[in-house]
Each structure stands twice: as C-alpha cells, then as structure tokens.
Length: 156
Length: 156
DNA sequence: GGTGAAAAGAACCTCAG
DNA sequence: CTGAGGTTCTTTTCACC
Image 1 (cartoon, protein in one colour):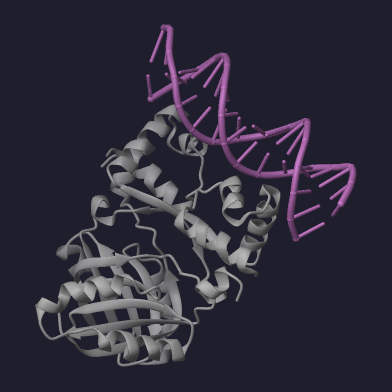
Image 2 (image 1 turned 90 degrees about the vertical axis):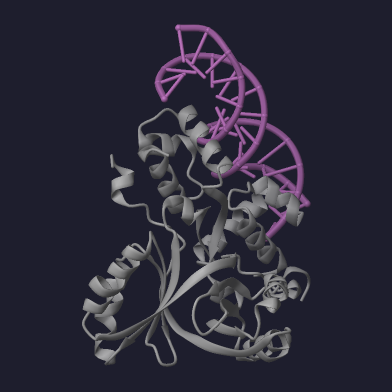
C-alpha cells in the first residue's frame, strides 16, 4: 500500500464505475499499472466490491432506526446473529460494549413494519430481553466513503 | 417504477459494475431498454451513485463507534450540522427522537483519535452538552443494500 | 515494479421498424 | 421495446525498460 494505492481506493469510493484510464490519469500512472493495482487491492480484500447507492425512501423504506438489543446471556449470541443476518430490513448489526449487547441499524417501510420487526421478530429470538429503539427524524449525512488521511494520499 | 425497474436496482446494488447487457439478461429486456431505464432511475434520484466498498480496517480505521450527542437548544442544530458534515471520520449523522439530539456513526483510527474527536472536536461545538459513546466490538453485518420486497420484484 | 503499443473484446449509442 | 449496426472505449497482452 503506497500513496498511489490509497488514491485509487479513494477515487473508486467516489465513483465506483471509474475506468482504469480515468484512474490512471488521476494517479499519473499508465492504465495497465492501474489495472494491476486494482487487481491486487481486490485480492487483498481492501476493495470488497462495488455497489449502486440508492435512495431508500424511493424504494418504500420511510423509516430509519437504530435498535439497541439486550441479550440475557452470551450463549444466545450466536443464535441471535444467525437470525438477524437474514432479516432484510436490518442493514447493520454490531455487537457493542455497554448496556446493550447489539446495535442494529434498520430501514423499514413504516411504523407498522417497524413494530412487527420489534415485537414479532426480534423479541421472539431466544435470549432477547429488551430492545430500545431510536427513530431517525432526518439524516444529515449517510456516507460509506472511508476517508483516507491526507498523509497517506501524499507522501507520508 | 415497475418490477423490472426494481430488479435492475436490486442487481446494481449487488454489483455496481454490472453492464447493461448483464442487466438486460437478468430482466429479459434488450440492452437499449435497460440503458434507458437506468438513465431514468438516475435522473429520478433512485440511483444516487456508484461506489467501491472497502475494508475500513485495512485503511487504518480500527474503531467503529456510535456517538449520541445532546444539544441544549435547537438553535444550535444548524451550526452543529455544518461542523459535523465536514468531519471525515463521521460517516453518518442523524437527528433522532429521544434523549439525544443526534446519533453519529464514526470510523476512526484508534482510541486516541476517538478521544480527540470527542473532546477536542465534538464537545467544542456550541450547544453540545453531552456525548455518549458506544464502541463496536464486532460487526455481524454492515450492508448498504436496501432490499426490495419480493412483491415488487415480481408482479405485486 | 513500471511503460507503450496494439489486439481483442465489450460496451454503449443510434435508429429503423 | 427490439434488433442490428457502427463507433467508441476498456481491458488484456506482451515486449521492453
């Protein structure tokens, strides 16, 4: 990983459909050199894929919420993880330090579907003792772009 | 938006570099028909862009955390929003209902940079009275893929 | 590691039907 | 929307530095 690799990663986060030639101009290398670097970045798992960003509201998901989930005993963690991984409205699931065992980020159609997710789905998973839901009123920023520090983009 | 549009959106979320021909095969339309639908989906803002997914850890961000921020009075909301939008380690910022005024999702290098973000940056923004930080221990799932309900992918 | 040139393959746009 | 055609662009390959 040298500064050129970091800059390629940065550019691809800004435009996931950038061509090798465009990237090559950006980093001042030849296009085959960029092709080789991208191949290695993907191989190393630094670039894990490419995706289209979408407006969830226009796909009928009007509610975003964070849900803290308490689980009574660590023996239930694995079962919980397996269940939650399959729920389509759960975009993220993190195990966390603190009161709650997990924090979920969900995008769901409306309050009815949120209610159903909470009481019919999450609370029926073994070990779940409590959920605490924080509803998002408005979103200022919702990036996935992991910024690379300037020191890494230039020369240390 | 008909089922074919939903399927195109779904496929592009899975592979943001899918070609028009690949998508055309997936939805059983001709390639020019798909090109036109994508153009309209972008124009309507349903597809908002394309991005490479990356492994934040390999880019030196070892810590993910959620930070609840309390602000003493709504008059400080706008200033807070402006400041926070520029912080590179803050990937998301949501105004929320409940105790806290905002919830931030951050990815940062280490505990030192997290501490600096909290005490040197966030707590110095006018109106911020309190922050509560929830550190992520492990992540089960961190998608951006907004799943489209099966009813919409097929025929209602 | 990188370059440059050239080949091979796709992608995308246009347009008549 | 389709199908075909043409143009352009990407990507791969390879000899050489």
